[in-house]
Image 1 (cartoon, helix red, strand yellow):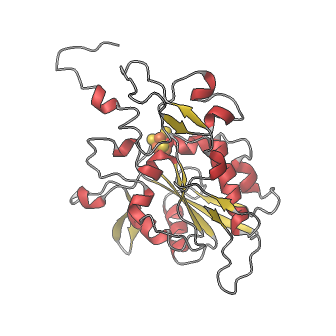
Image 2 (spheres, helix red, strand yellow; image 1 turned 90 degrees about the horizontal axis):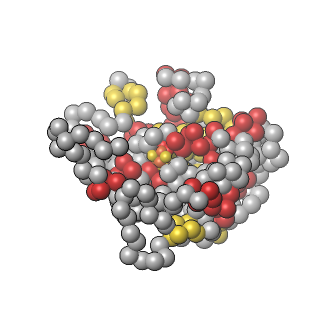
Length: 293
Ligand code: FSX
């Protein structure tokens, strides 16, 4: 799918000087954040410093990395909801929980609004429609991932399942999916740069049938059994689309399939139940049976 820049009626396309990235975190391990911190080309700091041609300087509203923590972080979310941070890109890390299953509690409480406790899913529902673009980083946020594995009691799901496949951000973009557990940090920061250029009307944004950046998921690698899981593949040629076998993990170094490690298919929608069925394979030993390490 080739998405051309939207100019909304009467609006002039062109790069902004400043934009906000609002990062929400829900059901995940924060590995996506760690991955993005390691990006080298470009580095996240280059976006924050505003040194990249035609790319606006980024104000990064992140639950752990922003200087504005606690109430100040929430204040930024409230300002975005009121249209006071414009344009902003919404990024979700981690899967969305089904708060209807939480009874009187909550799986993901994030502050209060008008004295009422709110959950991350409320913030997503408020902030996704006015966002210029919405990006799901990591397999948890795209397809549900590990928190949605067999046996979950939280109803964990990906962002598309929560907002609907037909969701479009204010600029007309679908949710941009960047799967991987965790995804390559370079790939994500590069995508963020492209989205900003696209919103400025400078480049097209090419997505594939799963709304992944087309140029990042063109290479596929064969799945390999993970040691210790007695895994075999019925299909000889099961594969996963991933940038790591070509680009490595950080700065073209490291990364599972690039260094001879097993590919457990972490970018696939059926990860982990189909490709890394840890929960099905490892039943806890009976009390007193001891552990074999
Ligand atoms: Fe998920 Fe992010 Fe896997 Fe972790 O938080 S994609 S569990 S490596 O890093 O969402």
